[in-house]
Image (cartoon, rainbow over all chains, first blue to last red; front, top):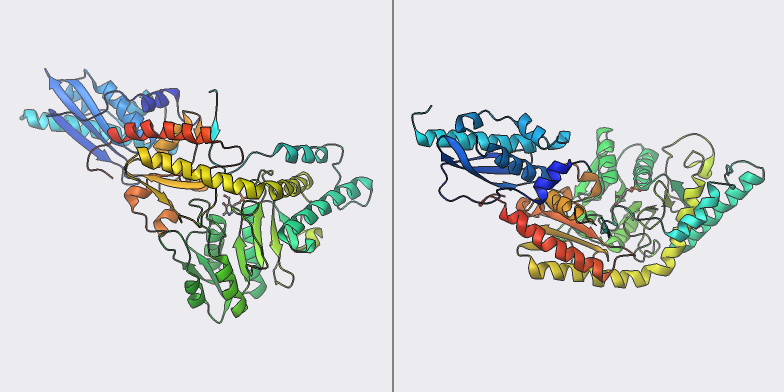
Length: 126
Length: 385
Ligand SMILES: Cc1ncc(COP(=O)(O)O)c(C=O)c1O
């Protein structure tokens, strides 16, 4: 199998999948090459991501990356989430094949966009 | 994983036990080189000749018109480059839905100064014989149209194209890798001059195939060396492979007709099961002129690789588009040529059934697909793809 056990587990049992109504921040990122897309929703309390949900369209790795991203983002400071890199997501999935790296890029990009949106909405923070 | 279900027979098939049994001695005590004049060599030569005879009888052609090759890919290369190089220049006609072995060979010939017309297909993936007729020029040196497409299974109107080729005196090559040994194929009635066929799609071994070359068709060898295969294809024969291909053909001759009927029923059962329970699906390819075991289905708003992966984790093997192109993230060029919209084409999954597929397998696949597609669609952002 070209995918890690962690990746397959997240693909088979996505954490926090689905829409969030009235989020405090939402962001998407699309990979032009194949149309893969992730969207992350944040509910913020006391400056931290209290609840994170995701939606994703794409190959198995993209769905798994969005899932692991939602898991890792939960509980962290929103300012901190702005800096989450694709490498962190890839590592959390125990690696990605070369031709599926975009999965981590898309998920990290969506998280960054959602965090920036939350900061914008809070206003004045940046 | 307890039970595994294999619905990817257009990619490859398991070697039939009788085929394997017939091959084994040729790895062992009958290892001789057919070109050797001693007893070991004569034994191997006899086996190669017997296999060639079997295949010739099956095709209704002369044994000395068959050349063994290393695969369908080589047969296609040999046929097309062989025709082109025999004439030194000119124009070729093919279609946009051919296997890469044909398309890329033609593209390479274009880079070498040949002209190539890539014909469009209709929404079923079918070439219009009138388009072939219109494309023929004074300098047309060959026509190459596949018998059936590996991705969607559409069977081309080769008889009509063959008649046109004959009228115009243009050699006609048919890539029959997906139909040889699966559906009836009469090269004489169809007006074919060159026919590619391969072992591993019909329960024979991989790495063995053939090209039938109608006597009188001018073809230049692409592989040079010894005097093998009447100087048309140099290289010591793959004796176990050839023996296996011969046996596979013999088994197919017995099983083919009954199996085709059975597979049509199973493939329709699969499609009926899926479309009854999954919204926004479509069946690609021709409704009737289609390979018995092939059902290419688009699941809209789902990416095909995620379905392939999800089913794989349930022990079910299907493929996203063609096996050769599944590593790339482009929608299938065959579906694009058929005008399938991209948001559908991205979700195309090919199910190809075979001799061991049962109704229980089909039902289990339906049971696996329904919740998987539901789950994947539920995770999808609204208004996307
Ligand atoms: C229509 C067609 N032509 C050619 C080939 C190549 O055959 P082989 O794998 O024997 O090289 C295939 C196999 O996928 C095929 O489906």
